[in-house]
Image (cartoon, rainbow, N blue to C red; front, top):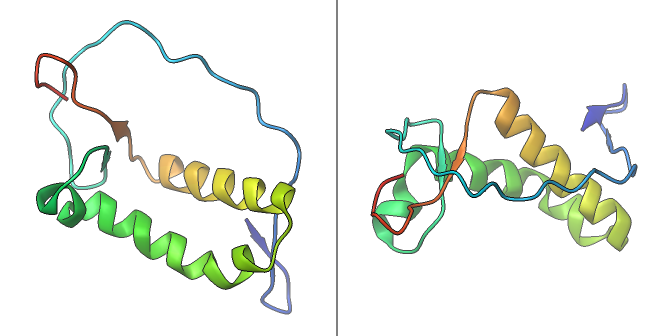
Length: 98
């Protein structure tokens, strides 16, 4: 998202290329910046997940009054911002490793 001089956010509505999920799984140790997929209190309280929810909350009022295309752009903008900050989006594999 880009911010105008008036403090409003603007979003690119260009379609993002789709990425197929890779089948290769390598394990890693999550950092506090990473966003973890899953359910439960430990996942919800993970610092990266808390940061993501804070970013989403900051855009909620704009998101609620936007059309579908702009909502998609807002979602991609938040995703890209989180990734630019060095976070990864991690999911546990069938082996229980991240």
